[in-house]
Image (cartoon, rainbow, N blue to C red; front, side, top):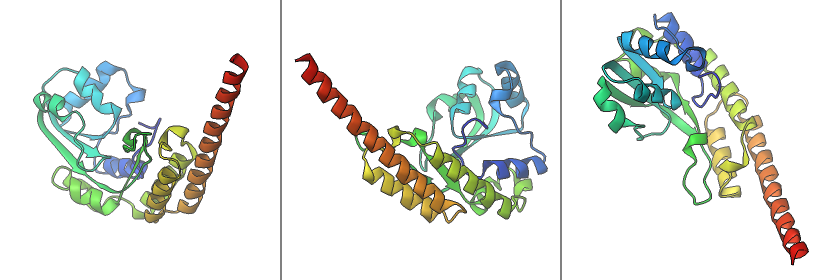
Length: 217
């Protein structure tokens, strides 16, 4: 989906897949029935892990080969539901880094994470399924697009990812810097700035609650 990029460099991967003969679908552009028909007629359907996979849950059975590029290493989204519906179901772990914060209880807030793969790892993982893709991912374009996605991710962060305060911010900043992507310092500054904003918002909310309680009493 173009609406919410959670897979860094996806535009470059789409361009390479299109050059290799694939049809690129964005679910927000098509009615549900057309999406189902397109997946049913595909020899191999490749998904980036996310809400687009729910299409297979809604679309019945008898799908062909489905390949899922995971955003969460080791995680197999909806595997028990999708396995009986597909002729073949393959999950590929492609993340080099995952930029992710925490929930208040300390669990990783994966639904708000950014997966950062490398083009080399993507090509190796996809080679058995899409051999035409090998060598087609433009490295310079991938870095450019992945850097743009990292900055966009950081700029859009809300308070929910800072469930462990400064620890969440430090984790995300470290992961962002380790990507080596262009704009990583700017992204790190945005992560820190949004953490400060979130902390101030919580402080003001507590003060408001205390004052309200005093007024009521």
